[in-house]
Length: 124
Image 1 (tube, rainbow, N blue to C red):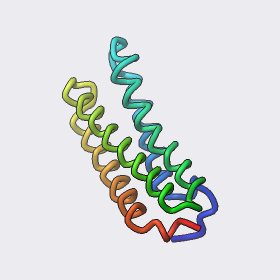
Image 2 (image 1 turned 180 degrees about the vertical axis):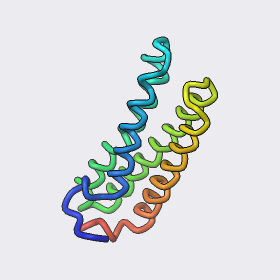
Image 3 (image 1 turned 90 degrees about the vertical axis):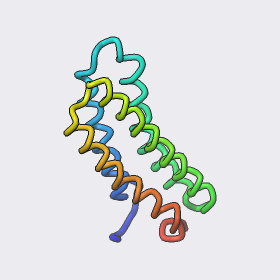
Image 4 (image 1 turned 30 degrees about the horizontal axis):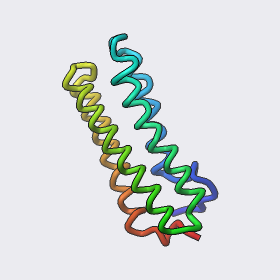
């Protein structure tokens, strides 16, 4: 692990951010009637992963608070997976798009769990 000066340096943040931007682009093709429901939900939860990571980083001085915010990240990650499943089942995402996103989120999930299990590597 290299020098981490900011939450933006965290690989998990970078990956989660990239996926949330991919979701933004993909959801532009969803039907208009989904704009204020499914599209809004999946965009919010995917963005919340990154937002909670930045909050966790800001609060890393307090290990329990850091873990709590990472747990929030994990909850948002699982929520995003659920919305993606709905998107795939409604045929708004292709099987290939869905599989790619789920694979990417599996990697993010593993990184979050690793951080939760070893907060001392990140906390001051």
